[in-house]
Length: 149
Image 1 (cartoon, one colour):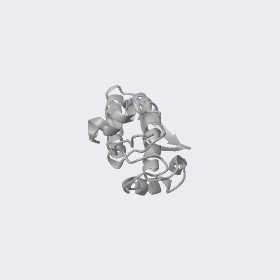
Image 2: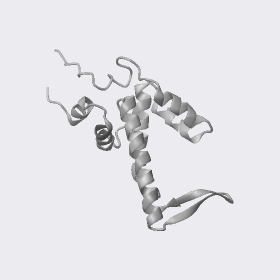
Image 3: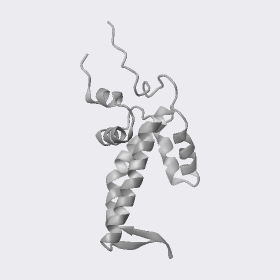
Image 4: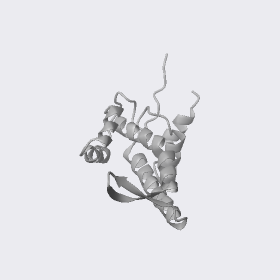
């Protein structure tokens, strides 16, 4: 049986560098499962990337007011916007795969756009994945079942 690139990625231990590599290699893969470690390490990477982008924006004096109607709620710069846009699809993909790990539909990611929805997603993302196979596949790290004919 010939292993695929996805099989190789699924066998990697979920530490910080591997999780970032996996999420970028699966940047638009909305199928399968993502264990907690993969999701949270990629979340940490995003947090650090946004801090880096903010520092670059401050150094370049490229901060613009972020307005909500007439209320200024913060400042944002070009690098922050570029990092956000560049990481949007990988973030969405790993969020959906994390929901799949809990045996939930990817449509639950829409909770991000309703009040208190992000809090509900936080709770979901902290909980362990379903043990054993679910409708989205086997848990990551489980060797693939050989087809016996």
